[in-house]
Amino acid sequence: MVVADLHVHTTRSDGTLTLDSVPKAARRAGVEVVALTDHDRFDPSLDGAVTEREGVTIVRGIELRVDAGSQRVDLLGYGLDPTPALETLVTEIQRDRGERGRAIVDCVEDRLGVTLDVEIRPGLGRPHVARAIDESPADYDYQDAFDRLIGDDCPCYVAREIPSFERSREVLDGACGVVGLAHPLRYEDPEAALELTADLDAVERYYPYGRDADPTPVERAVETHDLLVTGGSDAHDERLGLAGLDRAATGTFLTALR
Image (cartoon, rainbow, N blue to C red; front, side, top):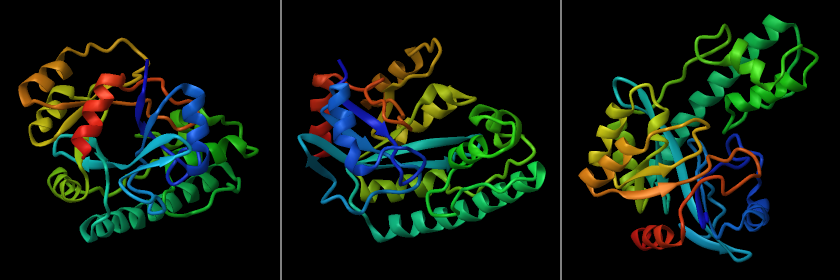
């Protein structure tokens, strides 16, 4: 049974859950602990790094895309208390995200001859653009938008500048109680990604890859580097608890945060 879902996105980035709707979604899934890990943003309205809302424990977190040299990976920071260094980093990333989002929207509108109903704002991501394409008169659904227009190597894809692994790890270390590697088996080179955990606290062991994924390399990294195990559904909608931690692992995680 999943007690803690430690990878959840809200409307602060590209999720559909609002902060107020998180407790209801958690209770519906039987989840007692939720980590809010929006892309390159954190929620300043929470009262602290770990709070409680309507009987659900909310962990303030963040997911950062970083440049690890040979590939880009995602870091998850948990138990976040904002620092000037983190606020500076997030501001830089959001400025770049906005510029990139505008470039993607302009390309799509020019290519399809439509006007997209999407706001160029902090937290804008490609899923927002894909939803707007799906809702436009163009003959593309959400998945088509990624497969044919805005996905990697597609005609309207625009790369964005991202911070280095080293800088991001240092900034997250100063702001978070636990810093881990997200979904290690999603990367082009999982072994290289897992080597990064030598400098981290944790790794996302439980994740809904949507395919058979051999966890042996992850478990080997956990043992080699004495890592904390995390897990989550990577929810971008209202379905929580698709993956996460059981009660014993949840207790270990919360103790580490403190």
